[in-house]
Amino acid sequence: MKKIKYLEIKNLLEKNFIDVSSKLSNNDIFLSIKTIQNATNADLSFFSNKKYSNLLKNTKAKACLIDLKYSNLLPKSCQPIIVNDPYFSLALITNMFNDQSLKSNGIISNHSIISSKSNLHDNIQINPFTSINDNCVIHDNVYIGSNVHIGPNVQIHKNVIIHDNVSISNSLIMENCEIKSGARIGGSGFGFEEKSKQKIFHSGNVIIKKNSSIGSNTTIDRAAFDSTIIGEFSNIDNLVQIAHNVIIGDYAIIAAQVGIAGSTNIGDFVKVGGQAGIAGHLFIGNNVTIAAKSGVTKNIPDNKIVAGFPAKDINLWKKEIIKNGLTK
Image (cartoon, rainbow, N blue to C red; front, side, top):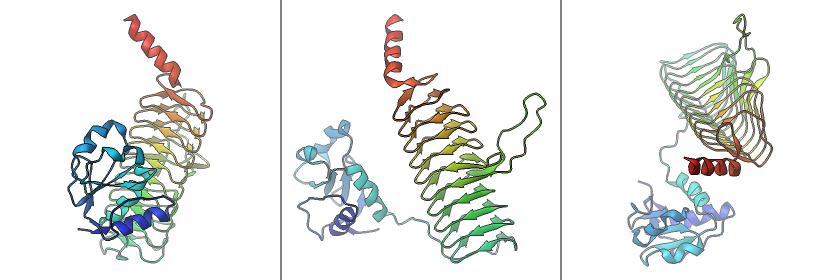
């Protein structure tokens, strides 16, 4: 069990340009982070959603990350740690308590298969029953789980984590990415001539840029001729389908069971809710939010929030929902 001092928490937050204020001693210790209702007097908690404000008065937490305007709702037994953005602060601090992070131990299992036509750099961990095929380059400090199939034609850059049962081919995975269990990356897309059903051979690849995460059982198809691209710092949830030649910008958040059809171009800072569907050959602008279960059939300009099927401006969609409800 990790023991984290308040001084360590304070230093981490200040290092990330977060102002911190608390009456805690620098030597006060926390054993874990827990929710408001489940925390004990050895735990740190957090408050970032006002709909849970009624729970604050009964929390048993030793301290709570909280905005100043809500701090008076805490009991005297719980010391406020005043920060402007409690949830961002929480995200940073959780990594201090993480004792399960995967890091390469530099051991390559005797039960793995490594092609002589591949190039492995330093301190790579490869677990049993994994195969590395021709024309693969794997850089330093990469962790690869069990029963993983990599190649042909794959480059994996530094500090990438690949969990069990992943398949990657025809892809470039940049630094600090995480590929979760069961993901399928770089296979041929859904492409054929409609009348004859003649299949189109896909010769492109997939590029996943640095610091991105790909969820379990998500599929990302290789491009027909160029690249299917996932931008930097993007988070793709589980069971997402990303078709050939899709381009997704930086800082995307895409929830589970989303389907994106081929050759659609999505901008930066886009958020897509669960089970939404996006048709092919569309342009989705920067800072767009697509509500869960929406069906996107047309281009969306920058800074729009859309919902419904076919997806439209969310305020218009809400008015239609209310109108339809009144007429029933």
